[in-house]
Amino acid sequence: MNATTKNEATIEADPKVPTVKIVREFDATPDRVFNAWVDPELIVQWLGPNGTEMNLDRWDAKTGGGWKYHEGGGESFYGSFHEIRQNERIVQTFTWAGYPDGVALETITFEPLDGGRCRVTTLSVVDTFEGRDMIVSSGMEVGVIEGYQRLDALLAQS
Image (cartoon, rainbow, N blue to C red; front, side, top):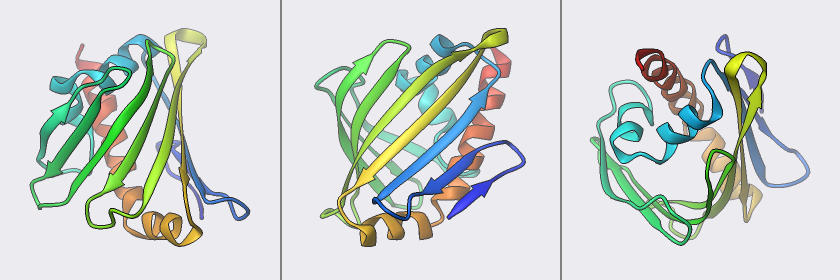
């Protein structure tokens, strides 16, 4: 799968390794975008598809911390923060409770661009192609695209 949206989010599934790479640029500096990723009061405002109520059960965004949330529809996700490097990168695990044998390792990088902008790249490494393909076919693209649009709106407010 390789899709580019009108919002310039690129989602790629590598045919040779079980990864998903998402790249998106934002009209805000890396520190502001990073903050929206780690602040529990902000992340609930943008993560996930439109109309989704996100409920944090845990959000301890620090190296060695953990997280867990569930959506209003009942889907839940959890993981651990392996490394939080201020304004640069987040390394975390990601598990959908409906498929607890599948754990993805995600590296999220925040790259400064000219004009006070930022490029965010998320690389998810999944242990099997089956798990990766299940993630890609789950409708995650809608959640990513709409979530990033909500993040755009949040960043525009402040």
